[in-house]
Length: 426
Image (cartoon, rainbow, N blue to C red; front, side, top):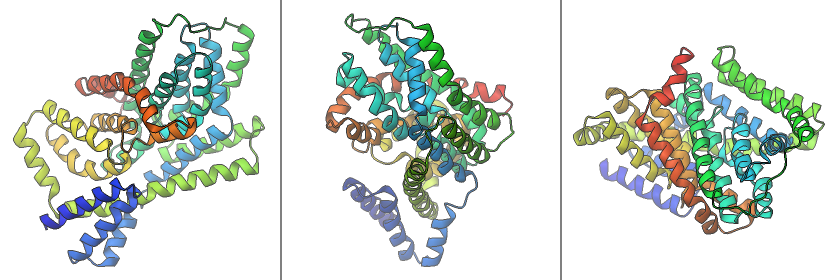
């Protein structure tokens, strides 16, 4: 059984190396192992479909639709204009606006890919035109996009909560402070970088422009109030809140006169494509999880980690190292689905809070979106700008320093994540 399991791992690795989609790379070898182990094909397929049969996961396509519609309805443009009107006279204004608009858009998106695809097309050319090096503009835009999958409504958080059977609302609340710390870390890097650049232009503050931009941003600003306010107050479940947010996007689209049949169909089509990819990973990971359970992988991993040390601090350091490596090689959704059933029981036995563990895992895996060879955000940024991936990564590399520093900070001080959920009574 162990030999066959190693063969499954090797085949999966080879398929990923030749860039076979993650869901198919997991599903094929897992089906082969299940059938070789005597599992009926019907039971294997049932296990795969059971991985999708979860009401909390219904929030995923709805949150994706919210982010896609926010992009296509011009809501991201309104947030960008407001940030620019507020910060125009600050040296390095476009860099701070980049982070500020990423924070604003994150309350609606939940996806780094949607953030960099939507905002990147607007921000990077404007920054380059204003005198910022392409490497800095692309690196900052790619890095700031990671705020979206950390700040609620985070799609990875929904998947983790469903996998770990913890409160999605509590995980959302725990993610808020770390997301702002990520933004602060990027702003600190911007401050240091711009201090040596006296050539960057500023724009005088224009009260009329600011008031006009602020009025235009009222609608988008109400989205997180409705969405997160409903979840954290207990008025909505995350799935219900996502549905309400979709309806609110439609209302904003009608109000701004940017919604039409073509935009709606494009939004639904894009959402279906993204959701289909995630659903394939969810189903395949459920079958792979069954294999790992039958092979007693959880027990073996627990014995290895506890033989190294029974300290929660050492355990979290080891987990971070493991996840940083995995995040560079495999899609984050797949890692959450496969590793949470293995690592979370060990964490809880050592006294690690599952909500805190989830926040650390999500931040860690999102850094993987910026690291090759997988690095999905790198490829999207390359596609948006028309520049080679290696050139984009050279711009991203310096920003990994503040992001990893934030990961270390959150790992070292769990209360940074757990303070807000405790305050809200989760």
